[in-house]
Image (cartoon, rainbow, N blue to C red; front, top):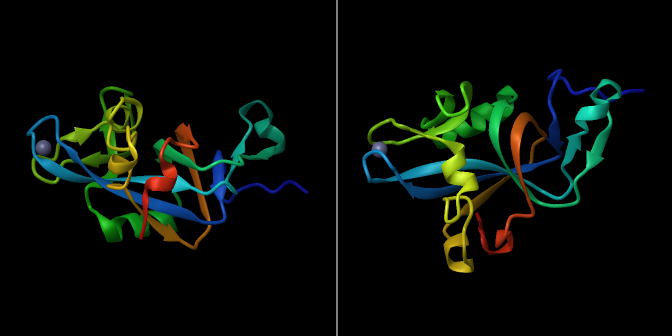
Length: 164
Ligand SMILES: [Zn+2]
């Protein structure tokens, strides 16, 4: 029996997850704004793209912070909306598509995931234990699945992030 996710083309799933939050300086208006991200426990699984047809889920065996998230189930969307109205679907000129992206709470500028997740000293790429400690992880004991294009496996200093 093939265990297909409810959401047809989800490529990552987990029995539980974390909502990560920290602050970043908006690179448009220069003010400090809250930013969110999604983090997954080592029990998360990813769908092998090459064998997607037969639903070959592979255990990751590592923590992950995911980004460029294109689809989320309602349960996860509601959790995120409870925490922030600034993390929502938005169209990025950089990627030329829409995904769950942070917006500055002051000027509403779109804060692309590339800057937050892929640049050294990006808000979700801490360069030290002390900056990692500024990231708070809120554990959510609910099933998770998503369509995501970005994965940071076993992010550096993950253990230093604060468990809420
Ligand atoms: Zn701003």
